[in-house]
Length: 66
Image (cartoon, rainbow, N blue to C red; front, side):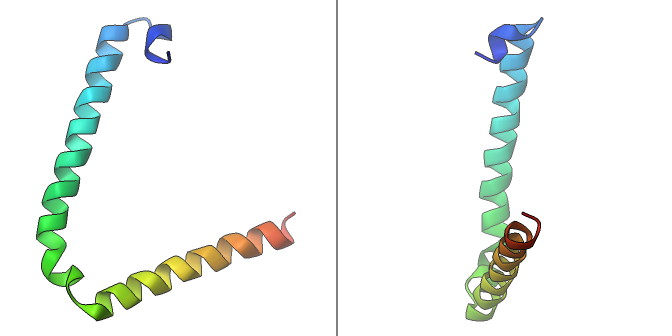
């Protein structure tokens, strides 16, 4: 329904489809390129630490900012 509200709905559809294609292509190629690093347990520990830090930061914002 968002595309129907645009002055050029066809251009909106084409842009959304091309962005989606680019996103999934980048995701697939990036995953293949990062596969050697993602096979290491240390990499996953660092990713988990980053996610935990972000979750604590969001929790602190919610708790103290109101």
